[in-house]
Amino acid sequence: MKAVVQRTGKVTLSVDGELISEIEKGFAVYFGVGKGDTEDKADYLAKKIANLRVFEDENGKMNKALKDVGGEVLFISQFTLCADVSHGNRPSFTDAEEPQKAEKMYLYCAQKLREQGVEVKLGKFGADMKIEQSNDGPVTIIYEI
Image (cartoon, rainbow, N blue to C red; front, side):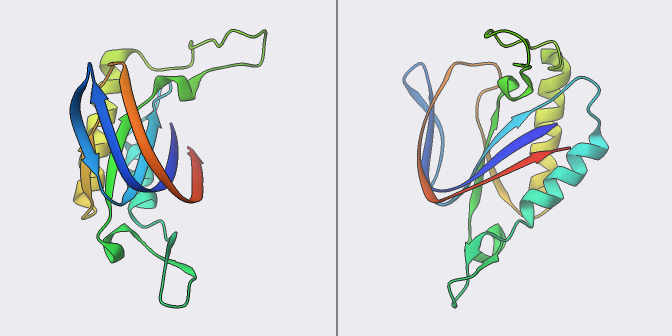
């Protein structure tokens, strides 16, 4: 299971020219599910993301989490995070979970984030999504569990 977490300002996600989701401040989280990934991993990841302290406090230190700053998460499925590029120039996706199981895990992890008290908006699983985001910092954290 992999997640790329980017601290952002405004993020919009569209499919076929239709706005699906947007947030004003928080995290764009790109989420990939590998073969055999479990709900336990998703539980752990949701807790880590919800409590990630990368927003500045009154002293300019990265010391606040999403809930502390009223931030949201735009949670985006991205199977390409599970690509193997160790051989040749064309990525292999054999390590990515099959779509039905991956979508179930994607929705499960989103729900676990919500249970941590985080406002979560979703992309559209399996769609060709167009994402516009304003990175803040930039701050990018990568989780591989």
